[in-house]
Length: 121
Image (cartoon, rainbow, N blue to C red; front, top):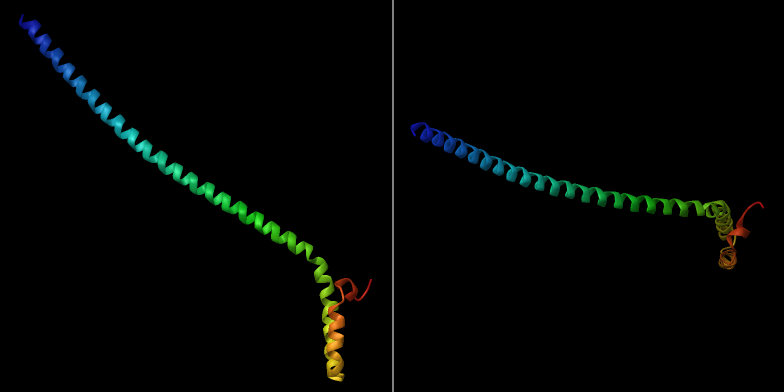
């Protein structure tokens, strides 16, 4: 009987050690789970920031493309700027010669279109 009592005591001791090990393992799993949840939330926050940055970058690229497109359409405008400068120079020269007719000439030039101001066709 003493042997049986010692066996039960040893078995009970092993059961308690096993239970303590299971408890530690459960606590460790809980800590790991909590840590993983924090890392997932952090990763989600970073992903949201990257998504926002990508959206902002796309909007900037689209805006820049639109501006470049508008600048490309202004090539016609840049062709008649020298002719406009020449016309203003002539108007100034006319003013120096006869200020009285400068107003009439300015009105006439104001009614011209850019196509009529080109120096060569």
